[in-house]
Length: 191
Image (tube, rainbow, N blue to C red; front, side, top):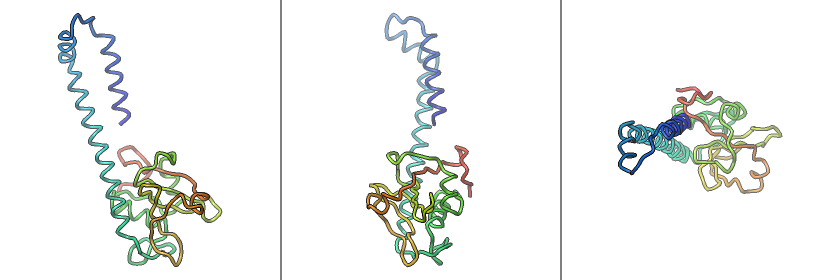
C-alpha cells in the first residue's frame, strides 16, 4: 500500500515540475486530462480501498470465528475444539481457519514471525502477548477491540474474553503484533 502512495507522490511531484504555467483553470484541467493523472489517481485509490476492505473483512471474520469457540476447554498442547486448545494452538487454529495463514506453533515463535506494533495501534485480529511464565511471549491472545482479547487462559479454564486493563494482564503485557498478509512477504505460511 505504501508503494502506491510513493508512486503517486512521485508522479505528482514530477508532474508539478513539468506542468506549464497555467493561465487559467481550463489549461490545468486539460493538462491533467492529457497526462492521464486523474485516471491513475482513481486506480490507485480503488486499489488502496479494496485492500483496506479485505483486511478489515478478514479481521472481522477472525474475531467472529474466535468468539464461536468461547467455552472450549484449555488443554496444554491442544490445537482443536474436540481436544481443547492452549493459547498458541487457539491463535494458530483461528488464523488457519479464517485467514488461511499457518502461524508457528508456540507463542514466542508467533511473536517472532509477526510485525511489531505499538499498543496504541491495536486493531481487532492483532495478537497480544504476555509474560505469564517468567519469560517473554509465553502467552498469546487475539485482540477483539475495546481493550479486550480472547484466549485460552490455563488448565481448568475455558476460552474467554479478558480485559487487558485488569492489573494481572496489564503488569504482564509483553507487546502487540500484527499478522501481515502473505502478499506482503511476511514469515507466516500460506495454507
